[in-house]
Picture 1: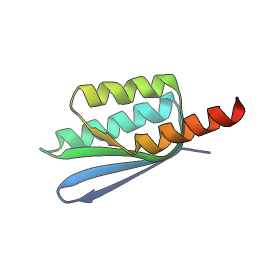
Picture 2: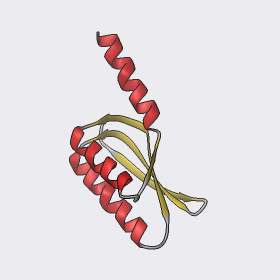
Picture 3: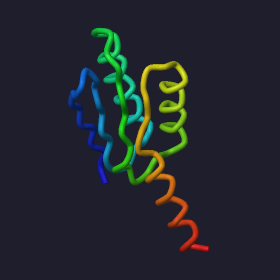
Picture 4: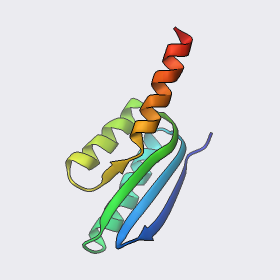
Length: 92
């Protein structure tokens, strides 16, 4: 499934909702969008990954870096991780 990145604003915060599969190119685009939003003003940015179905290791590194630099708050990853665990358990 192709990656879809939807941006919206609510309560003085910019949200990026990511859906589908995230590969390096998608994460680099998301990082560019996040940096543009953050540096266009003193705006808080949240990345919502609840609808993500795949995340490669390079993308995970970019997301982690953005979070550790304080650029974003990441939410919705709990559901993604639980889905991955469920799939792994069924395959075992």
